[in-house]
Image (cartoon, rainbow, N blue to C red; front, top):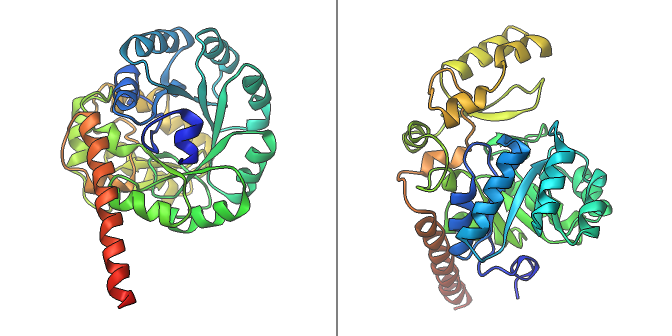
Length: 318
């Protein structure tokens, strides 16, 4: 049995990423009901908002689901308390030191997965006792690794470095890409952007439509002096790029970013002044559809491409 399916007790080795302003209870429950693992993104939620989403998700699905927790969250203790009190059994941690909370969570019976972007932190996560890791390549949307290592290079490097299961992320939005990740050694895939445009995504409709209108080259990694983030081009992204080209300091970039910029764009729908976090795979996304349809299409294409490769192998053997 696939190690990730066994770890989470899910049908398909497909995980929906925990994305700020996109992955509330509706999306998480829809993905879980379709056989994948849905994730509620706590990064854009106050503790009691998260509690509400967890409770609604429990009512909407009897399948496993998890919560993504950025460990640098200012209210981290309260977020952890909510997760424990609501008996969430799966946590995907990110943006911080996994050694801080992994042991505590595992003592409470929680399965812990940590998101990394390089070998150093993959090994640290394994040493911290996590059950699996997400290896996220440079193509991914949102906050990204400073090394800018692509998924194609990152997955085999990480697979060689650790003994725990590896979930590939970054640039994966189709069955073909999923198969490529498996060929590189991944045990499962985590998909963000393709689910950000799902009907059940809490992203603003204007953001969804901007994503499906995107072409190759319409995203760029920005704000490397702060925390690198992949953004869809708009007036705000242009302003950041110009400031960086002029040698803006960390403080100047932070002032330009301001407060709640991602909420302004992704959740409230300001397509010019908001921070629009999305991956390079957005250039391949052309429709807004139910999450179940997106997941099933990815899985079916994955199986078809496996069969095609077997046929190719047979021909090459001749």
